[in-house]
Length: 326
Ligand SMILES: C[S@@+](CC[C@H](N)C(=O)[O-])C[C@H]1O[C@@H](n2cnc3c(N)ncnc32)[C@H](O)[C@@H]1O
Image: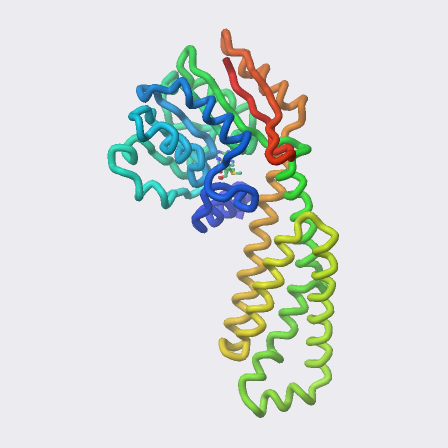
């Protein structure tokens, strides 16, 4: 599988899980606080006749916000939302038809190659999205589809933000879980013995088997190490989630059999691998001040566009850059 396909696959699977956005541990429901305030200010001038493009939309956290802020008083613009992943946000089907028909999702569409005519959007928005594209080509496409006088509003990953720091920490913890001799490998070694517990004769043979005792003690040791490690990292969530999933799996081995249990363990490993890909990508695409300044210079190529850049803080933590053209 090519890198691009892997990235698409990891995000497609994430969105198929139904999450509205990728920061589910920090925000219940949609984004709020400083990020919500930023978008409320961006939406304030909209009257309903505009066309808005959301790039790298995921499950449509931004279109959903536009619907919630503007739908009730007839000010919802026409919204096109693109993402390179397979997306079909579950909430769209629950909207009243007059609102749903104003929001169109375009799966498998890259920012760098937009299927829209020149000069057709009044506002381009993106939340933790545009920076994932090849920026030079992505920005050129945005400038192409923007009408004269159109504006851009972005929330972007910041190299020093909490989500980026957590992303980096999560990559380390996933590598620890998957290392040779790590928890997943030890769980794999224990599964055949756990499966033998399904019958009295099997259980008796496991009791007498020194290799079974060794596998169990190594597994227990890995679980204890995980517990200690969780106290030393900001990314303890991924450790506890894996601990719970593997623990539950071990409880079920005798009932489901060794092959089904191995398949479930492979599923846990694959899920971790996809999460690693997303977190590594997040860290790799986060922008420092110079990169944001370069982005502003690109937008300034369009006559009259100037950028206002800010830092977004939520509960005293840095959560990203805001960038808005005027
Ligand atoms: C962190 S998520 C943000 C999703 C959404 N904007 C939100 O606020 O929840 C990043 C998204 O960028 C998408 N993406 C990455 N590269 C892309 C590209 N070149 N073109 C379009 N979408 C892309 C991914 O598929 C993923 O859905």
